[in-house]
Image (cartoon, rainbow, N blue to C red; front, top):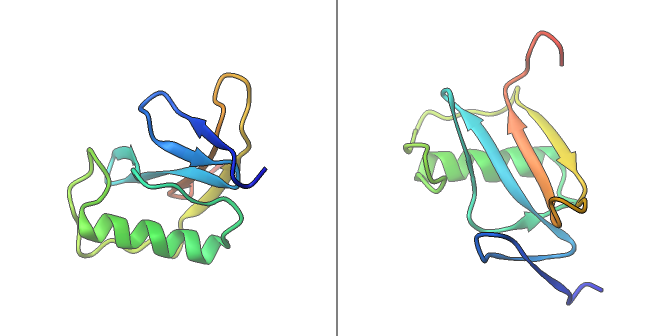
Length: 97
């Protein structure tokens, strides 16, 4: 199964053990173009997201050399019928969690 590839609507290949990374920063939201390991730790995911933000690698979010995501939440969502690939979201904490 690890070699199986899923095609997502924007034609990026997502391996079954990987996920698309979505980041919310500065009121903007976007996906990293490259897939990340779905089972990466929260610390590693925040580090990947922070590096991507600092480098300007998230379409729709300008580079921010001061981006720090230590207090951000990491949410994981498995693939479902309507979205046939896993997703990981990095977002600010809210009063509700």
